[in-house]
Length: 489
Ligand SMILES: *[C@@H]1O[C@H](CO)[C@@H](O)[C@H](O)[C@H]1NC(C)=O
Ligand SMILES: *[C@@H]1O[C@H](CO)[C@@H](O)[C@H](O)[C@H]1NC(C)=O
Image 1 (cartoon, protein in one colour):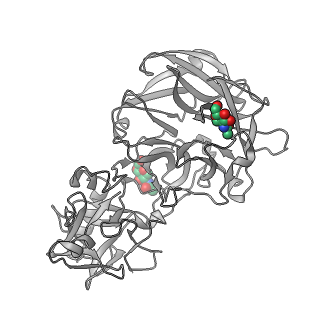
Image 2 (tube, rainbow, N blue to C red):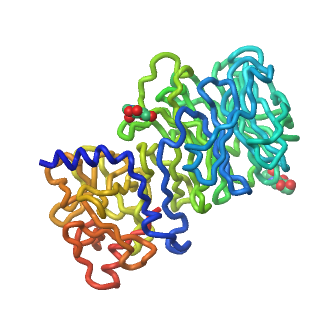
Image 3 (tube, helix red, strand yellow):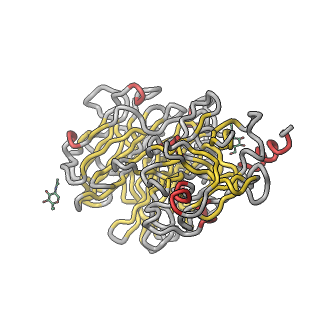
């Protein structure tokens, strides 16, 4: 009976780019310290190990590994989404330069003391004989700068080394990279750290701050690589990637107090489980080799990473070009630590809905795919149970929206006898009438949003005292309006 509207929604879902942030207008810092962001994934096709930096000139700059592994490319745009279609410029070409013969991997662009630097891995004498390599660009715009080679970064050992990143902590600039440690007999890579004399010279010896020790770091290959630092709440967070670069690739976490002695490996704490892994439901495989950037308004941290949209890589993963660049919001919890959630489905990025009535609580489902579940207001973790995609138009057409769980694509919020449920689109009680809403300005605060049932606009999604979400009338302002108002994050 509902075949036609289901097909319409299925056909249009990937093309939807309506952001709540846009519909609801700007939000005060008090209402939402980190308002929702709206991007459409995939961001950039066939670009792996992506790095996006927002420079002081207001532009976003992008670099990444290309499938041919032979050159350094840059793009720039005034918005993150704008990088998708931005012109790509080659600033260094291995074959044209005559330096090195092997792989060119994982470039990062940094602006240090008035000049641009790209740190990347280069195969010096053969494909896998890779070393950290640096080029320096002079000029305001790195796409048109004059680039010169500063050469190989010397480390403790002449061994396989890659994925350099640089950051400043307590006034000291450091380089962190992945390298085979010949003292262990392990064929894999560990993470090393050393302070820098200048952007291409280390103050040695470097120290090992992490080795691939857990089983999930040792699938296919024994790997720690692709580290990148973000500082928050007095702590340095250094997520890194582990295991083979197929669907086993995953992001683990190192962290240290920002004022600790970072060259003491004991200052670094390592999480025993990965934080960001493949997700069969969202169709994202081998997520990792991330970096961080900030949203256009400067209020949200974003994780930029690559993943494939299928799990079975035929042949050597290195020869597979389908690692695409993706971006999504990082959520910092009440305890001050980040939660990357799950790699979200392709298409528009999801939002979270925080209650106006109790700003510590979020609209949350506990779905495990076993059938319809009711929704509650609940604590902010886990993030994956609190992310929803606003699909517009909704099942009931223009002017309506339907709300899809990011972690369970194809499952939508619906009104079932006055209770808000998450249920599959194909379920008989999921109809245009039960699963379509009208999004309006927040009843208690215009900077928030409220959702009326599309075919009975006197009834709104609201919470009860017991935190269950219901679809019920809202009489007047005051508490009822507060219970029906949500801030998007
Ligand atoms: C931080 O920097 C100050 C000033 O250079 C220095 O005295 C202090 O030892 C540094 N702290 C650590 C933990 O390295
Ligand atoms: C993966 O993405 C490509 C487009 O980049 C698309 O054609 C293909 O259908 C997607 N595959 C899956 C399994 O979603």
